[in-house]
Image (cartoon, rainbow, N blue to C red):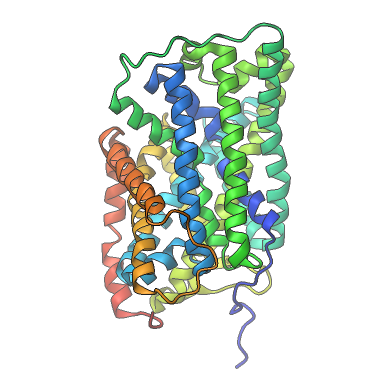
Length: 448
């Protein structure tokens, strides 16, 4: 019987600019339009507020350098799943795949879909469940686009990344316009009174959430051309651009609204645009924010299905997930499962009026736990496989990955201690995956 076309393997079809477009589209998403208000409340000082955004950019860049070494030395569609498997064995990697599929990635997809739904509902309301309807439609449509093929998902990403960046540039221009008219607010004097470590820790949870998504580059490694050279280039260019943009946007927020005004504004981006361009500016920005949300959603769906594919290739009992569609050049079955779980979370989130913040609480501790393990994996793999060809080596080793690991450990602590009940739910769902480890031990499809 001939082998079905669906048994193909990933091909290197993504250019450096494709990778940059995906990463910018993932990272510059809805977080920058929602998180700064919360960060301002947690810091309470303009200088501390701007400082945590710069610190978050530095942490992100350090993490990206670590991932650049892992991704160029161990290119694989499974990304972090593959790194963890090589460093610790199947037990940890299978638990990670479960956590990513049920908590980390699908929770992120649902969170982004809800923010899109909030903005889209102001333009086209669908009744009392309008936000959830828009969210579910967005997940369904973009899952379908990526099911059609990698080319279609890639083209959609380029289009929405342009809208994403345009929204940010509009905000920066609005801030400059208000500044030229003498409307900028002077920052208060430097003072750390009233600023506690708990507030800074919680602020960093949201700052690094807003910078989040850069690690998705690991899932592009099997499809990135000349990955040994282009992985580091893709990460550094993307993160450098994002850090500059985020600092400028937050400077515009505090400059136009003042820190107190930012604390009180649920839609700071709209407030800045309204100050500069009136109601027309607010309407235009809403359209662009919808585009930014869809950019993040599409990129997150695109990379998310890869870990299911890697898991299906390793576990005979889940072999259907390990099918790579030759027609679409993608993990089609994995997309279907991911879309189903994300829609279930959207349904559950429709009952919660604090969907976005709850999803942050839900995903944060699990995300930082496994991010810490990936950071430690860099040390483990350097020690265990000293002869491995490493086209890119993280600079200032071991200091750089050590700083990254310490940051991950602190963020894990902060995301458990300073967040709400949702964090415990996310941890509990992760632990429900422990029975899957028995399947992994009994039915490994192939040796490591």
